[in-house]
Figure 1 (spheres, rainbow, N blue to C red):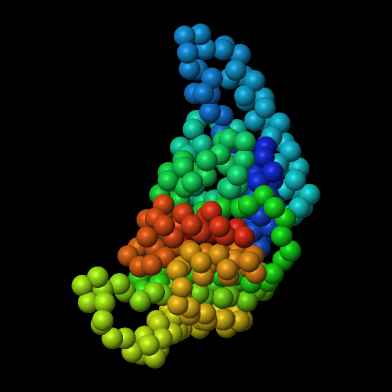
Figure 2: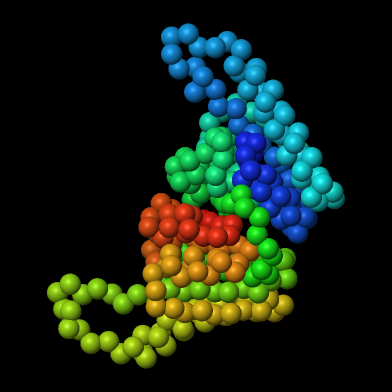
Length: 280
C-alpha cells in the first residue's frame, strides 16, 4: 500500500497525484491520511471546546477532495481515507510501518507539509522502513528520466534498486550520478594527484554499483555520470531534467550522510523534481 499525507495545500494535491500515479504503476492500493493535531489549540488557560470537532470535520472535507482527485487521476486504483488525531510525524510513522511507500508535500499550510525540513524529515525519513517521497507543488513536464545518487558505501544500494524499479515502471532512462571531490590535505597541500587514476577509480565505482543490478533490469537504459563537483550541485543540476531524484538516507559516504546532513538538506531545498529518500 502507498500512503500519502494531505493537509489541503497545493503541494498536498501534487503529492496525491504523484501517489495515485505510483499506485497505478505498482498496482497497489492508496491510503490518503490526514492528521488532526489539536495541541496548538489546547494552549492557554481556556482551551476552545469546539475545536476538535471542527478540525475533524475540516479533515473530512480535505480527505473527500483528495479522494476525488485521486479517483479522477487514476480511476482503477483502490482508494481509502483515514482521518485521525495526532501529530503529523507520529501519524506518518505509524501509517508507514507496513507501507510500500510514503508520499508527502514539500510546502503547505501545516500538517504533513508544514516545516518539511523539521518534523517530517527528521522524524519520518530514515526512521520508517519504506521510501519517503517528497513532492513539490509546481507542475512540471514529464522528462522520462530518473536520477539516482550513488557513493562509495553499500548503504546506497537500496536507493539504487528503488531507482531501477521506478525507471522500469515508468519506461524511463536511469541516470546514475556520482559526484566526487578531491580530499583536502590540510597538512600536505602539496600532495600530488594522478587525476587520470582518480577519474578511472570513480568511474569503476559507479560501474560496479550499476552492474550489480542492471542484469535484473535489462529493459532500463542507463546513463552513468561521474562529475568532479559537490554532490548537492551535481544532483540539483540533474534534477532539472528528471521526474524523480533518488538518494539514500543513511550511510558513510558522500550522499548517504544522516538525513539532515548538508547533502540531504541541500537536495531537499534545491531539487527541481520530487525526491525519494530510501532508508538503507
